[in-house]
Amino acid sequence: MNHSVRITLACLDLAATAVADQGAVETAYTEAIATVGIVPGTVAGTRALARLRESRGLPQRDLFRALSPAGDEAWAATAELAFERAYGSVLDRLGRIAEPGTEAALDKLSGAGIRICLLTGFSNRILSRILDTLGWWNRADLAISPDDVGGRGSPRPDMILTAALKLGVDDIREVAVAAASAPILQTARHSGASMAIALGLRSPEATHTLDSLADLPTLLLGTSPAVAGRL
Image (tube, rainbow, N blue to C red; front, side, top):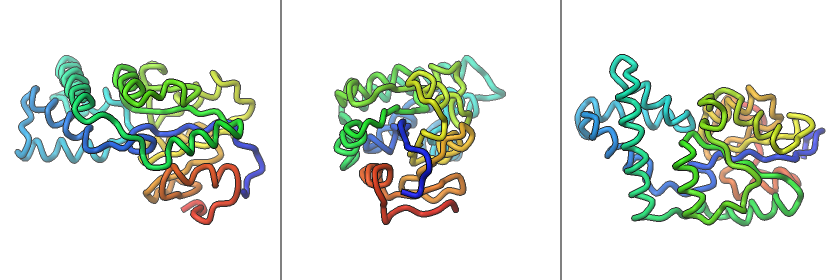
């Protein structure tokens, strides 16, 4: 591994990285915006769905604020609550399935002494539901949402810096961040983490690129042929 500092903390983007989405987010989002008057299939509905796809990794509350008429906080709060209810319902119907190789990768990293922090733009309520459904409370050393940092989620560095502080990291360069969304890769760069690993996408923020989280132990613990340099 071409790396002068040993990685001691891996911060992993939960949605679409460690957990297979199965369309749950878009389904819940579509149901939620319909409750506040944005009808799926209309021009407004299509635009709202496009905004969601562009905003993966950003704080959940920020997304609904951006959609709200003239920054209407009450509208945003209503839409967010509807989303959480709809998402919980979708979880009950579909369950959650870890991405292939994810659990084995987490076990390898933990076994090598690398601590794990799960990052999300979802609220703590949804984060807890996902961890409950997967039975993952003991799979990570920490799980952080924007709720834990005063709402300052990606692309701000607060979640990663908080994880480093809580888990006793001595040097921020000992942190690697792996994500399937550009905002969380931006968070990695803003925090000073030495590795910003793009999973399944190409990003100017990335220091490395991998096909999936299953390849992460090879990168962090050895030499991976899937690694690409900074774009």
